[in-house]
Image 1 (cartoon, one colour):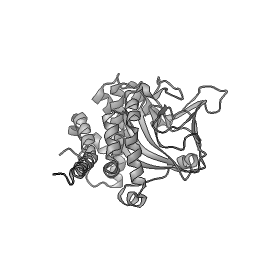
Image 2: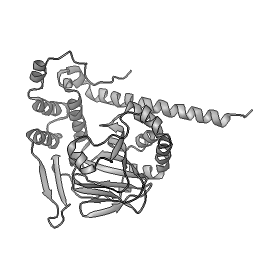
Image 3: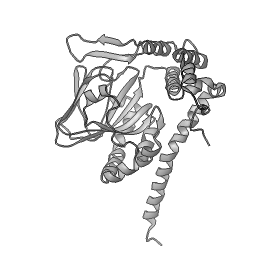
Image 4: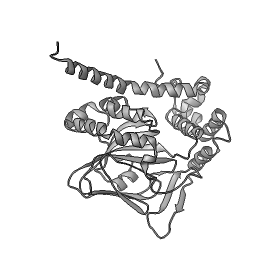
Length: 326
């Protein structure tokens, strides 16, 4: 059975031992990345990590004449193209596949929303609000999400409730960091803000959109959400949104790696995420040695709940088709 963790489970800690262990944490992560993946190939990522640790924010005026043409980031990797919209999104093969089969996502979400009480009871943190006060101030109280995937690992509970959507994302080979449904209430706005990270782009797939009444502005460009269409944009650039309709707007939202990152840089970022989630990884020599294999195993294990749910749905479907036949 693949492990659910990358490192050995830590012993019980005291406040003093925890403080001593985490002293110099940033430097230890930086050195571990260099040792694991090489100094030169990871240089940009390690510099970004050091700036974040030092509290250095990046700010760039892309067009001083426009109030939203500004890039803000606390997690910033230099050299990545900064532009509001990456169009058309269907230049990406995965976006073409999503648009071709988008009704799979629409139908699965509609079925879940038809029994919202059951969804709330069976799901994990269903329709959660913004994670912090800063996000809440920009997004408002009505903007809610239902998580499917976080830092490449699938949510055991929610992914199993939407197995066809998860299978499509996996089969389309979307370079996911995160995936979740997002709903925006009627007659609401999201104020200008940055997501403060330039190494991830954001993609939206319109799932249940009041077309012609919902718009997204990133930098100096405004686009309307459309059902079955994918938009790809840079949320480190100031952006805002509006739902002018009398009903809720639903999209499938994905965060993906910036396409100009190298494969090694993506691995370095993933390793840093894992160190934040499991600091004891740095104290486990075997886990560090076996990190690539263990990471793949953890991701494979996280797929099992939605794979099992998908197989069960397929089995029920075949049984229904055969009912009454001789």
